[in-house]
Length: 463
Image 1 (cartoon, rainbow, N blue to C red):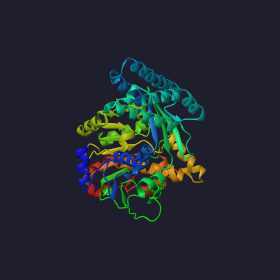
Image 2: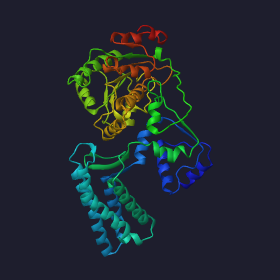
Image 3: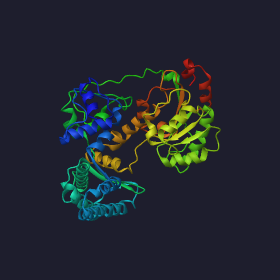
Image 4: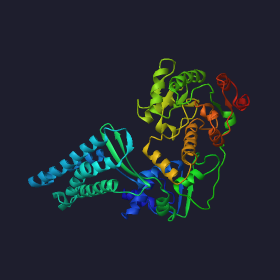
């Protein structure tokens, strides 16, 4: 690690991912040194992901997995203590175990994600949180570990202090622009304290310290403006901006299919109806398709309905690791991949294997997500329109990310399909079209077969 740091210090260009960058910001904020050497110019590629990543690093998170992993590591070093020290240490570790179990009991019975309301916070503070903090404090300050000088032991003591402080921060009273929430998955529970507005922290830790910063992405703008992106990450004042058209000839390389005869996504028959339409689309394109869903429910429902109706291999997210699924999808040219979540961005499948991209519905963030709900509420309290200033532009950027999976080089050709009639029938649909590339559009399935039969140079003229 020291050798790599030395090489980085001597380099003129350093390439890191966003997570390491923000981890470095927090290390520097704490005054504990640095991971990345000082720099004068900063370029963020894929900058549309910054708000979510920065929110994670500027907030606090603690999971029962972290706690139990700490307990296991401490037990492995217990042999360094005498009999009495081991007995006392076990009592401290038992407090962490009992507190973690109680935490899972209090939170794990509820929905997958939710806010930590006052009653739940009080229970966590007086019961589970109290036991966990007491155990961690004992190990950090009074256990036999505290007097040992071995590096692994000191690292354990430091972890106990960090975990204690993290839980203290999560449970302590916070300003109204912070959200306390939880995630519950099987036997794992994670507590979070997240800022709803990162602009002030971005200004203090980054904008005041670095004079030249470039933000770039294919999906930073919505309706021809950067206002949404600027407002979310706290970029104010006079800035140099530019929107540059794609070098791909999308009018010739792509065709968009948007049906008019399907029910709206809230209709109980939506999943079964789009399953029929997806089957027809896949037959017209001979497979070669990535089908992106906004929910696991729709993915699973559609997957069950179409799996025996197609002569093509059908892959589903969750059946294998993401990288394995993508490799299989690339190699099996006529296969179909059903996916959600992480497959909406950051995947690259150039060539014939991805000749059709289908999206089930417009990707509005679920208002049931605690962070989304809290951001909506914060905007409403400020007198702003949450739909126009947050939900709509976020959905536009997400849709652009999804559609960007199709055309990856100048020789790619393919069909884009959004099975959500709101795109053409709602009052806000035009905002999506104002933000998307100018691609020929059709409502006729027969046009899809004709699109693949004709040369690329005239493909866009028949619609």
